[in-house]
Image (tube, rainbow, N blue to C red; front, side, top):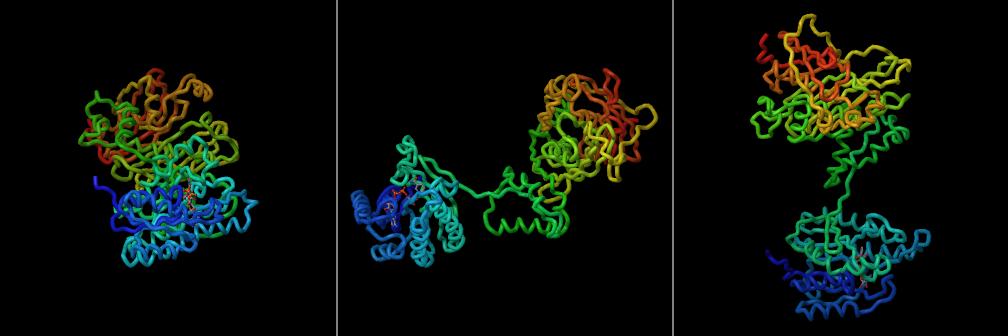
Length: 599
Ligand code: NAI
C-alpha cells in the first residue's frame, strides 16, 4: 500500500495551535509537508491573542523532524497567512480552514457583536485565507481546500444560532468553490468533526469527551488533502475513528397544478398534497444545480404535454427474479409440472414472469395510497369494507424480467350500487424510458358506501365482463389450492390481513381468512395458458374477471374454458369444487396466438 505523503507540498493550517488544527498540522508535518502553523492564540470566545499556541506546535513538528513556521494573524487577515507560506516556502498547495471560536447565547440574547465576530472568524476568515491562496492554486493548477462545518449547522443546536448559520454557510461556500475550482484541479471539501477540545468541553457528555480524540479525525482530513483523493465538494463527517459522507437530498415532491395555468395552484391544494410534498421515502441526490433544474424542466414539459396531470397517485414498483418466482409459487406453479420451471428457476432459458404478476403494481398503488378513498369523500374506506369486484390486466410490451416500473393511478369511474359504491381505478405502469408496459383496471366495491345519489352504470372505457358461451366447456382443468396458499401469496405484496388474520376475517364478515381474488385469477390464467398457449407467457395479451364468491385456502378450483379461435379469446369461469360456487365469472383471456389447442 503506497504511503500517503506530502513531500514538496506546503500546507497552511489555520487555528493549528490547539485541538483539531494541531493534529492536522502534526500529521501533515510528519508526512513531509512544510506547514504554516497559524493561530491567533486567543480565548475560545475570540478575546485576546498570543504567539505561544502557534510556537509550541511549530516546535513539536520540528522535534519530530518536520518543517514548520508560525503565523499569528487572525484568519480575518488570511492574506497575511498565505504571505507567510509564500515568503518561507515559495508556494502553497493546501489550505485547511480550521480556526474557530464560539459565542454561545440563546437567539434572543445574541448581540450584534457576537453575531459579527462568529461570522468573521468562520466565514470571512475562510474566505480571506482561501481567496489569498486561490491565484497560486490556479496558476499551478492544483490546490486542496478544507472548510470546517459542524453538526450544529446541519441539525441546529440550542444556543448556537450565530455559529450554526456560519458553519452551514461554509457548506455553501464549498459547493461553489468545488465548481469554480474543478477545472484547475482545485478541490474543496468540507469536514464535519466532533472532537474533544476546549470548544466542546462542557458541551459533550463526559464519556464522549474522553473518547473523541481530535487525533482520530486528522487522518481523514489528511487524506482529503492528498492529491490521490479525487473528491471535490464532498461533506465528510468524522468522529471517534469513524467517517462518512453527508448529502443533501430532495424528495420526489408533488406537482401542484394540472396544467400550465398558474391559477391552478391554491393554498388548499398545497395543504391537501402536503403529505406527498414532504414525503422523503423516494428522496434522491442531485449532483449539480443543472440536474436539479433539469428535473423542474421535465415537470414543466410534463404539464405542457399533459403527462403530469394524472400523477396525483404515483408509485415505483421494483422487482427481480426472486419476486417473480415467489409470485409464481403463490399462484400454484410447481416444479412437479415441468413446463412451470420457466417461472420458477432464474437460470431456465425461458425464465420470466408469469403475466398476471403485473396486476401487482396497480394493486400496490391502490393499497398503499388513498386512491380509492379519494373518490369517496362521504365515507371511510378501509380493509374491513372493501371487496375486489373486477380486474382487467393488459400487457402492452415484452414482459420485463426485472427493473422498475412507475405506476400512475387515477379514479376512472364511480357507480352507486345502493348497497355500496363501485370505484373503478386505472393504473398504468411505465418503464424507465416512459413506455407504457401494463394497464390495470380494478373495480373496488366499498360495502355500505352506496346511496349517495350517483349513477348506476359504468361509463365507456370501463372494460366489461363477457358472458360465457352457451355450451358445455371445451376444456376444464382442476387445481387444488393449499391451506397455506393465501399465506404464501400475500408475500408478493398484498398484505391485507383479511387473508391471514382470523379476527380480521370475522370483522370483514367471513368465517375464516379467504384467498386473494387475484390469487384465484393467477390459478385460472395458469389453466388457460397451459391449455391454450403452451404455458408460454409471451402469448398473453389481457385478462378480465369478475370475482363473484370467496375461495378458502385448501379448496379446489375448476377452470372451465371455451375457445374462440377467431377472436383468439378464451372465455372462462372458475368454480370451487367443494361447494360448486362460481368464484370467477364472465371472464376471458386474450392471447396473441392459440397454441396446442386440441378441440
Ligand atoms: P480549539 O478551540 O481547540 O481550536 C481552535 C483554534 O483556533 C484555537 O487554537 C484558536 O486560538 C484558533 N483561533 C480562533 N480564532 C482564530 C482566529 N481568528 N485566527 C486564527 N486562529 C484562531 O477548537 P477545535 O475544537 O479544535 O475546533 C477546530 C474547528 O473545528 C473549529 O472551526 C470548530 O468550529 C470546528 N468544530 C469543532 C467541533 C468539535 O467537536 N471540536 C465540532 C464541529 C466543528
